[in-house]
Length: 199
Ligand SMILES: Nc1nc2c(ncn2[C@@H]2O[C@H](COP(=O)(O)OP(=O)(O)O)[C@@H](O)[C@H]2O)c(=O)[nH]1
Ligand SMILES: [Mg+2]
Image 1 (cartoon, rainbow, N blue to C red):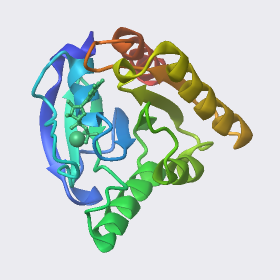
Image 2 (cartoon, rainbow, N blue to C red; image 1 turned 45 degrees about the vertical axis):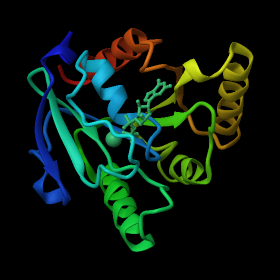
Image 3 (spheres, rainbow, N blue to C red; image 1 turned 90 degrees about the horizontal axis):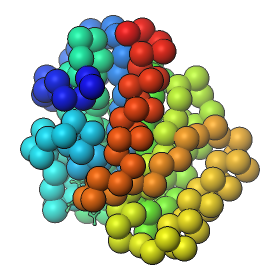
Image 4 (cartoon, rainbow, N blue to C red; image 1 turned 120 degrees about the vertical axis):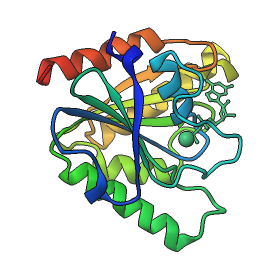
């Protein structure tokens, strides 16, 4: 699988320093601390590829990883973390929105939420501004190991209903990066999407 070849390429604070806009890209979005970096590590089968942190708000740039010959994973700044000054938050947000709207190689937006707290105001904002566009959307409900089956299903149904009402097509995955739950399924899904397009 292409994920095993993953390696770090660059950290970008501006869009014009990103790698050439060719091939296929997947961006990982979500509030701080929901497990974006852990998810990238789990997909790639590596513990320390993307930096994970117990201190939220540490990633303040786009971290780019190459997978395969012509595909990239992009670890985005977390949004909605209270301790980050509003001006900085706005700057991150507009950077990501601009990236999602203009990046020709973008094939998939992976929006990660904590299954215990789905659909926080920041999540809804992102869904409303980025969902329903031309780029495929996958929603990850992470940390499923923290909830029982009934509560997992409740969160899943809640998100499904929100997307249906907002007419946002999305693929939902219940994941635990800690226990490896649904990681293979997600890997397959991403690989298929990337290979359908270009590879
Ligand atoms: N229980 C549990 N904790 C997780 C899971 N995934 C990530 N975490 C923890 O959540 C915290 C934030 O993870 P990180 O990947 O840095 O989140 P990011 O800020 O979204 O990149 C870390 O302490 C991780 O160990 C999971 O599936 N289950
Ligand atoms: Mg991170």
